[in-house]
Amino acid sequence: MDSIDTISLQDCPLCGGAAAIFEEGGWAFTVQCCDCGAHTAVSTYNRPEERHEAASRAAYTWNLGKVINPAPGE
Image (cartoon, rainbow, N blue to C red):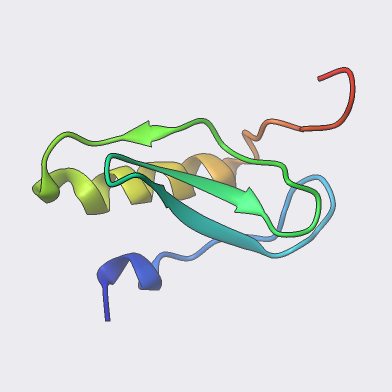
């Protein structure tokens, strides 16, 4: 099991939906709501040793409620 799978994510601060962490092309992570599409900013890494830290930063941002709302007008 990859240690990324053990990172805890709270429910979406906008709609209460479930969240998932996504890796972007092997260089960054974001967290996104599976229901409304709200997401965090990209958390990048440059070396494999920084991978877990980047995923943790994305999760931390999500758990604080700092999300981008994809609704019209945002």
